[in-house]
Length: 313
Image (cartoon, rainbow, N blue to C red):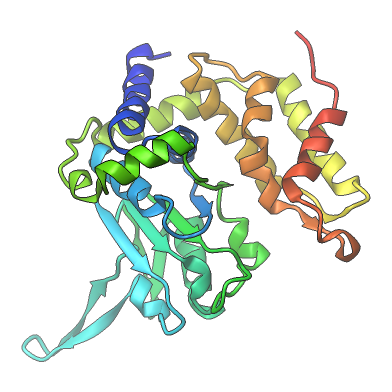
């Protein structure tokens, strides 16, 4: 395995966590795992904790084209994908690309958009392409959507349907920084202007090469595959769960576990890699039975993980 490439990725995490996004190491790491695994990230938290700054910082340090979609109740699907405009001089229509045609797209407050608009992102996130008026346009690679979601109980929000949630490889929160760090942030002020001057430490080509390395050179053996499959089966049989982890969820666990193993310096996945990423990858995919909807999905999944024997050797 290319140890220099791993060091390069770890350096990105270190620079962001030290200079720009203090107290957000976990969110940074999960965002990079999402990118390396070819998935998307959903950040669920209240406004004002640095979700937008995380997306801006990542796009800058990775040298990616950045696009932002601010979701509101009157946002239209064409505001995301783009639309055809008639050119009088050419006497023909030409397609004007929307913000989805960027390498890293921040979809801010995604659950403020109407369900019809939310669904406009489904094809783009899953198929890496957009179809407008019967014409299909390929999206650039790498392609990463970082969406933010406010708590569902806030006014003017529309809960994401399960089909939309399932398109996200991971969900996580930012959380409040530790008290002393928060005081320091208040004292020093916002770093938003500094984010615009970040020098890239990666190129798009290097990101694609690293993603290929993770996919092809980090091995996932029979025992770990069986461990993941057991988790899927147990989630489908659990008394509090009406719909467990799908096959897509199992594939996501495998992809994220490979990226986790890569960051840990191994070319093979161990059960501990699966355990580390299981909550952000799989908890949001669970659908609880109506009588158990008040339970915390993360705690339900933790209890499942605790019950499953860890393969040895």
